Length: 316
Image (tube, rainbow, N blue to C red):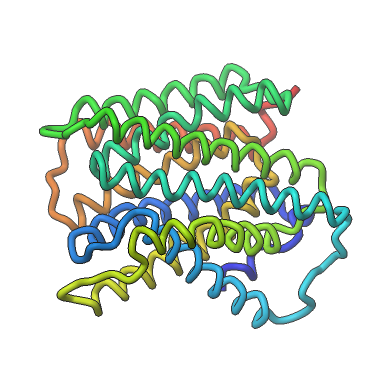
């Protein structure tokens, strides 16, 4: 299961971390589409959906952690207990904001706009935060890659036909981007310092997130009502297993060993995979804007990933 790939980050190579992030980004791209189907077929709200995603994902992660063959931890944790607790709480709060605000933005302004605003603002916020707090520099190639990725997102947004952009939804998506950026930065910071267990980080963060969301989910309505409960249950199971338990375990492991700005650009695979899914499975037309924006982002991801793995971009 997903946690089996999340061993001590100190043993994870940058190349493997890049692969984990690529898989996570593609998996995340399917979450918004599944959430849209949940909204269409039930009365479940954004907070309740986010709670079920985290709670069910936590159960899957715990089961996988106990079923994993071999020792539970390859190396003893070198972190003091207070630091581990603080790291888990901070990461969980970041996930709470990121996930809930994203699902709310999908409901408010649609899947396409919510996804591209959240992931488009991410690289800018992360690059700024990494420079201010982590001392990481993009370099010329990294700056070009981020610019190309943002250009691709702009093409997707401005080139879309009939897309309803609602200001309130955009603001919620920016809040989601802030939560995502904070989570990425703290994961990189503690992973760079060493001693962090990505598996334990993922499990602890989801426990904190589920606890934070539970009272709000109860107030919103935690049990969905639908004429097709089997479909809703299947969608919730998929959201919990693939873009949650699997993707976040891979994300935390990869983000701990890969530079923050690189992580932010690779995660732009999320809107790319969402666009491909919309064309291939939902029958949406493949427009010139969709194709051009997708190619720009894929090119940026590829270039920055190669630079990271070869050590061509040096942080200072």
